[in-house]
Image (cartoon, rainbow, N blue to C red; front, side, top):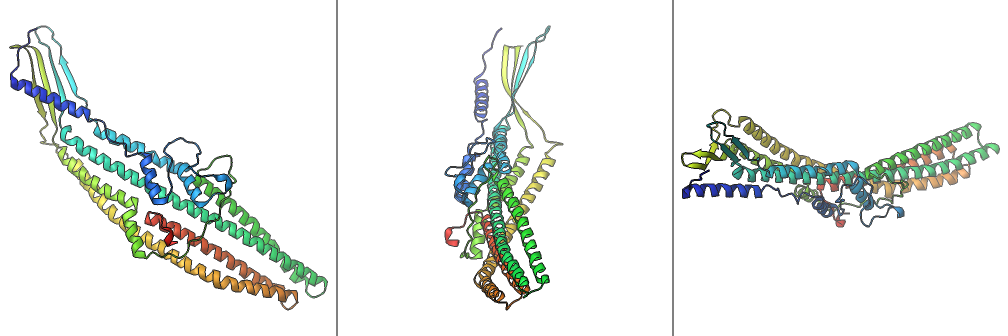
Length: 452
């Protein structure tokens, strides 16, 4: 077969075409190393002082420096949940999907090769087609995929902050259940003393059988409340273990008391500013707006598609012939109207979602701040004024009852008021812990110790 010499211009075109193809193929791999669990772990450590596990094995594991056998502190409970909560680990698998989307955005369409075999007088012909529009579309697609991957990562950070909030609230509920049970045990002991004194007075002829029966009914009711509160404590513990994702053999974990935060010193305006600067879900919304804007531009660029062609035949007028060419789709009918309309609507939706997220963040911060202030003031009033007054009243009532100067019904009423007041004090302490957990979650970072 005779091969004819090509002109210098033909050689230049062929070399340029091959060079462009090599450059495009070399850049097919997408950069995805930053969408890793290690990246999220660093973000969590900055925001909450906790880290997440970097592997995805479906087994119970403990974070570093966590030992559950010696009592579980609130920080250890949060760390364990971040490592073992199944729903959170399932959400973390979205990182793999984001890496896949990022790699897909960097891929190019495969070149196509066609050949016509020589049969009879027909000469052999072949052509190779390369999609050249990727030269200017691939960087845009990669930029959009990176923004989406970062948006997913910020959304996962927000999910982790929600989990931390839920664990701290579950710890508060467990503490409240324990306090209620403990106070009711004290009420049972007090009611048993009242019932004994009433029976003794009945034997001495100083009281009636009706008063003894009433004291026995109150004692039975106190015992029933104790059994019910014991079951409530079991339920609260199981809910906490569920959030921790702990399915190990040791489920009888001892959870340490959760300290009640003191008055908050940071003003509301400062907390709002901190939240707007730190909340990962707001950052995710901003990235969604940027991504939607880039998609709108990409939808316009996708109107034109250009392909490079290398065509050859076996026996042209001068023997074997080869030369470059181009194929351009003429956008007469299809100008990607649907894609552009959808991209415009997605951009509008992303903008409004970002505005709504800012409004929701301000609302969450204000609600948590108000509830914290309300619970702190009410707890101070009950702890330092009402409960001490009722405790003194019950002490005097018991002395008067023993001397026969007070009826058992009056003593029971005073004792019931004290128990109710102490339960209310415990509920306000739990409300304060919940409000603090909500406040830290709404701000997006762990508040410094100077705020506690």
